[in-house]
Length: 453
Ligand SMILES: Cc1ncc(COP(=O)(O)O)c(C=O)c1O
Image 1 (cartoon, rainbow, N blue to C red):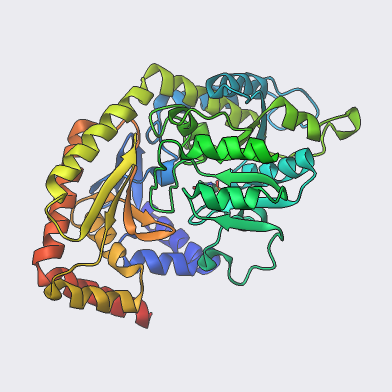
Image 2: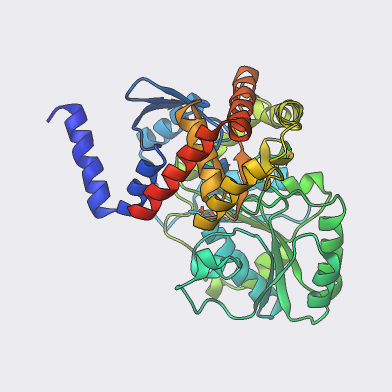
């Protein structure tokens, strides 16, 4: 079969055998293109288009797509033909990576447990917090996203993710993100093993907390014997301009979950960093040496990719780049978007940014907007995403738990010309939303297609 026919056949197999609904969704949004080559911030399609990635696989591609140094490191590891998943030896690369991660994280974080995903790191945090405190309760923040395995899902309130999968873990409770009074009320019961928070909520709408929120939350946790756990699956690995977002807020968590960008976007990997005290509560005897493990977790490809990703992040000074590019991007976006009534705020930290939209006041816009919201609350944002992709060549997405916030998180290697192009593209789409009936008629057409397929 020729190449394209083969690809089409596999496409059809994916449609039949893996996830037909996902393919239909991409079709409806006109985002079902075939990618031939991905490099840095650029994605090239088989039909000759260049798309700039301003989503980074939800903060996976901090070092950009297919970084040559990371590919080379993985290739060398494969060629070495070492003990990739022997499960009966001391994997020295896991030791080397753990050493580097712990020294970059600092504070109490002295040990690493490796996993193969972010959810799995959160599952470990749940178990370890319970083992350490001998308490069952788990506190999380409204709007949180911690992953879709049963334990992690128990730390998320949105019924969209939860419905139909219960009963989930008992003894989990939510507090509003940023509300210290509500937090203290819960903690004072001394029932909670851990407070698990994203330092900056990603899917909740890129919510950056007030400067003293995390520090005070940590102090309250210490007062009431609850572990202070940060989920840095999106915010870690320099995404916000520091190795951990925790470093912006001057906190020393008892555990930190990492994943996504940890291995350069090429090999699945996650990690839970923790204090010696937490570690000692779990692996506390020879008998319990392997009481919590996972087959793939310390595999040498993921560990080698993690080491290479750290080398790239450090040698290319991507922390500084994230800070400078983020400041520049937010400044430019505010400049061009502040005059539009449907833009509520541009916010973020480093290269984790969001543009929040709001319902319009003017009747001319309010009528189609409200019609739209009645059909589906996510539809409005999807039209923005679709237009940015199809008409302007930018891949973005709305936040998973807040459909009014457009996530803007390009790879940290993004160039100023890419940022300028994005600012212009967003400005044009927002102008069209405010002035052109075509924006709304196309949007209603999309809504109808969704309802009828
Ligand atoms: C903050 C956060 N935590 C945990 C997870 C779960 O990670 P994974 O999808 O690798 O299981 C995600 C995934 O998007 C996330 O954004």
